[in-house]
Picture 1 (cartoon, rainbow, N blue to C red):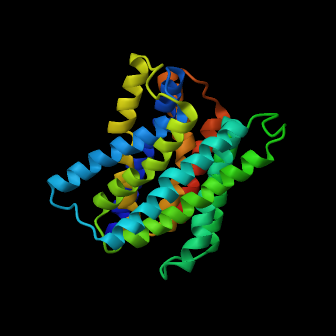
Picture 2: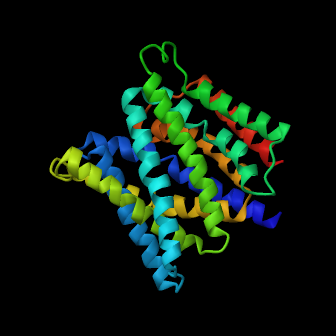
Picture 3: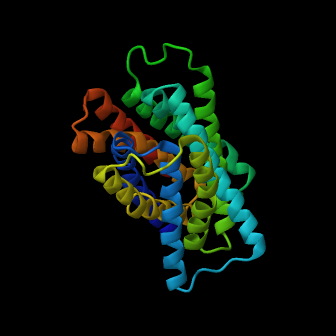
Length: 288
């Protein structure tokens, strides 16, 4: 019970900080940063920061077998999941992206019992996930949002959600016998390499059009909105039950809207507030 309470605290820290990522990415892209290269450099620098801390604390240890596992985790969670997500966003719109990427907790709840004896599919978990997803849908939906030829984009977004679910399960498995700080930093570092290579091939010179505001957003994203929340999330996965932790992912689009409202003056309305209440209620049901 004590570990589960710590897991909830770590998950909340991760989600609150991640909630500002939407703002940082939007500002960065508006000021000259390019999406794939932006993501790659974010994870490269964030991973190096975490590994520097691990080395300073004497916790940077892994075997050759670990290297292959961490490379697979990095490709799955950092490279493939982000590539599918960015392409899905490009083929749809922000509202659809927020809705379908947040099917991930359902997949975690369905898949976790196949890998962990302590995970179960229960009526309360399915109900809580459904209520949480309903809150995301209510906060994200707008009239006419589903008009258009969005099938491929939705398929990519759901694939990204499934990838996120598998990577969370894999991360918990790997961290059962390994240090969370090293696992987090290594998967980010190794997963950033395909993103940087793809960005160089598809987007050209990365910093050629970036202004000072774009540089500030990049620094913020690397130092505060990547290293800290990923480490907190991995600590939550290590300490808690994966289904109970993953349900906190429903808070991300809500917190993104709130940070956009506070920092960028984006709209806030009753639908979003009602969605926030539903998400909170769904999380409470799953964790009780």
